Image (cartoon, rainbow, N blue to C red; front, side, top):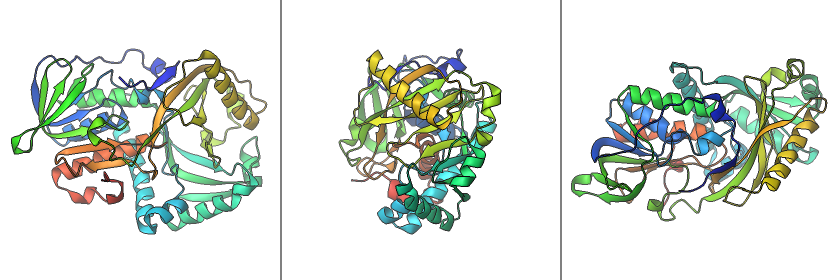
Length: 406
């Protein structure tokens, strides 16, 4: 099993009594089989069962136990690749469609969260995207113009406007309205429970070791326990490149990132954080940060081009202190200390886009792989897109440039 994180995670402590699901103990069949019980897989399973499709989901570990647990829960329509750069990569029309689709996905995540019977910490927030240095200001202004031309809800703040609202001063910033935050662990577990309540069959500790094509276009999945699942459609939603793709994903790169959660910050200080906005910067790798409902700061960054999570306590402590110092430089008077620190593997593609769509060599096999820093948003786009493809509703699939490439 691929190791996806190390250290002490914060989000699982917020829902200590999550439901467990059995391992698959006998062979079965379904219309759709989803492989992966994280954000992407559970979103898919919920979408399929809500549309009336007989759905089975299998997870080799536990629901929400992989990358979902290490997710910072920041939801934005801006991406790791700036819109002005994406225009040069895939053209203005496609780039604008992609960014607008990301904003629509946040709306869909809000609709989904609001229908759940428990509070999963979903709140709409604006984001402050500041220029890390004066040298990056021209590029930031170019990005603001691109976002404005695309019709996205943005404004530009000068250094004076930033310092009026926050206890720090930066050369300039884009304010993106319509972003959001969520508790990813609560969201995925609650969504899995909702899918199960609608009739989806969820199995934990069930590892798929072989995929077989059958006559008539059906598929047979073999588990390590010797059982099989037959399905018309198979969706891989496992967060990294599955063996079945055999390198078709343009050499997706696996990196690792560090995150911390502080102890709750006293309320008087929190008033200095304007409307609890999400914060990130133009520097690469970038610092990103948010507040939790109980006043903690969750921050991440310090990305490294190494796949394996860190096991050295010394390295984790060093990186966590670096993150804390970055936060402290923005909020110098705040009494801050680290309560949780973790390190997680994440994937990014060479073209900065997710991989969503049907395998051109395997009809009926789909992929919902949300590489990059916007995985939760991509997972919703993928779930709705693949559902549209399965149902034959191609109006739900407006993003041909993020399909699987051969």
